[in-house]
Image 1 (cartoon, rainbow, N blue to C red):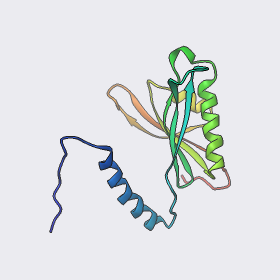
Image 2: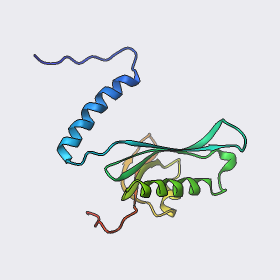
Image 3: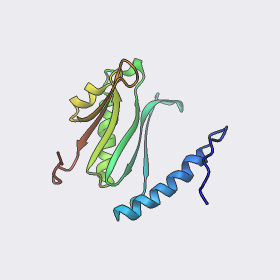
Image 4: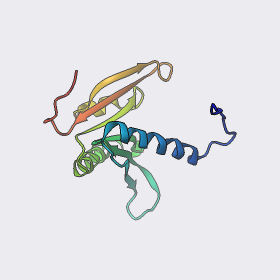
Length: 149
């Protein structure tokens, strides 16, 4: 019997988790490289406060760290916090045995910031969102593994 496709009226986190578990098991079987998806959170807080004002969120798997989110409030930009967050993330990636870090940045965000810190573009989606570009960037932490063209 063919499965039916449904679109729930209310999308729940459990929906993603169910699909993710299935895909993760498939990937582990096919790659022969089972690796847990391990989250990373680095939080920015004002001294003595509990409110999160920015930070970095990522996940490591298959020996790479994906930086999903990085935010420094406008009032604190230019003070080295973005650099400190990325250096801390790279350190955590090394501790986890990662060989590289990858991320994406929109043209209205900070692709040049990442390039100044050794990240190189490896792909771009033009006009996403309209009038802007989305650039994928990566940085190898372990140069002993040759890069493929």
